[in-house]
Length: 140
Length: 140
DNA sequence: TTGCGTGCAAAGGTTTTGCATGGCA
DNA sequence: TGCCATGCAAAACCTTTGCACGCAA
Image 1 (cartoon, each protein chain N blue to C red):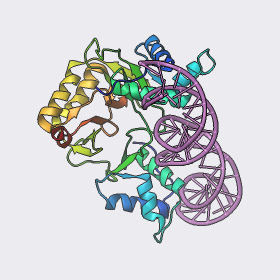
Image 2 (tube, rainbow over the protein chains, first blue to last red; image 1 turned 180 degrees about the horizontal axis):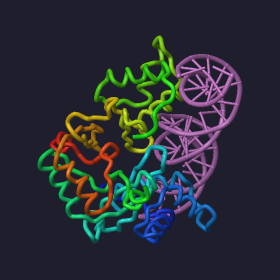
Image 3 (cartoon, helix red, strand yellow; image 1 turned 30 degrees about the horizontal axis):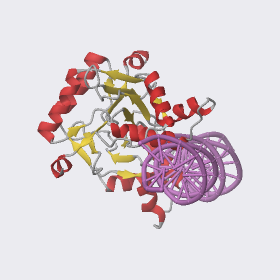
Image 4 (cartoon, each protein chain N blue to C red; image 1 turned 45 degrees about the horizontal axis):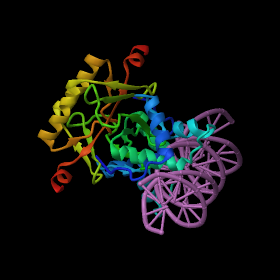
């Protein structure tokens, strides 16, 4: 699940603490920068991007990419890489922009299907389903 | 499936012709710009972006977004919005970057599941499955 | 001491926008 | 003629990179 960081810097600890504190919420690199901008521990944006990239490699956080031009989202998993409720899928509403977390065995099974039938190893952490959410469907 | 274009300009026709000529291949906005750069019908890049956006709204072409920073891909569907072999899914290999077209009933069924069980209307034209393709799996 | 991490600034690439001009209906 | 589309340039946006300095081990 990627390389280990060799050094353990203050900045790395601060970012980890922040990610852990927001729990399962999705935050952007800009959110992290903003959080540390006026605090006691200011941090360069290069450091934020580089640490986030590293944490993704280590499997500590997930990264989700949506429309080009909109910032990537990061989500804390935990140092063990263990996700309690099994694989988590994400649905993004094209109308209101809401990101829905979904724990569903049937969805999880398509990973197996893709692999056995098409030889494709699905990465649920990167895959996002686009569509229209329930609330927006009922609105129109 | 979105608004109709009010005017029918030469540029619009040129872009449509080009999209149709490359068929199901995926091309970027930059590809379109490049194709018309040194030809007899030069075209501003704003026009390319604006027409592509409009054609997506009209349902004439599909747009796929991958990692932020990498360009979006466009794919011709046809003026009727009809796709011969049913819904087409896309898998993108995170290792080699290959984009795989996939026509699969089982995948199509997850759309129904998402709707009936989760109230989510999947948009297969925007959804991309990320993972590792067969060739790359066997390589390692 | 070694060399990785940080920070600043600048560049990179894609996409959007302001505004005057041109062209379709 | 009226209004939309075009084109150029510049901006906006997120992200990456070069380089010197600082800090962890």
